[in-house]
Length: 101
Image (cartoon, rainbow, N blue to C red):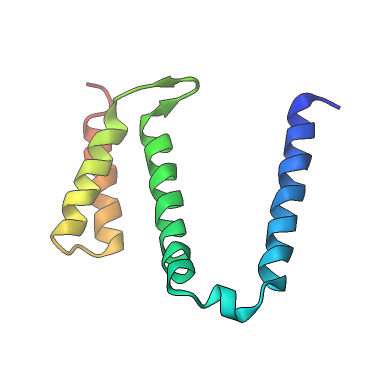
C-alpha cells in the first residue's frame, strides 16, 4: 500500500471519528453562539479556498491567467445583483475572451 493510500485511509478514519463525535456531543454544547457562528463560516471558508485553488493553481505552481478574469467578472456581476446563471454566463464569456492572451 502506498503512502498516498495510507494517508487517505487515515484521513477518512479521522473524518469518520469527527462525524461520530458531532453526533455524540450534547445539544447544549452545539447550541452555543460561538459554535453556531463557526458552523456558519466553515462552508464559506471551504468554498473560498476551493475557488482560490481552482483559480490560481496549475499542478504544483501558482499562475495568473484567464481564470482570474472570469472570477473577477463573476464577483462584479454578483456585486451588481446578477442572478447565478447570468453571472456564470458573463464569467465564462470573459474567461473565453481572454484565454489566448
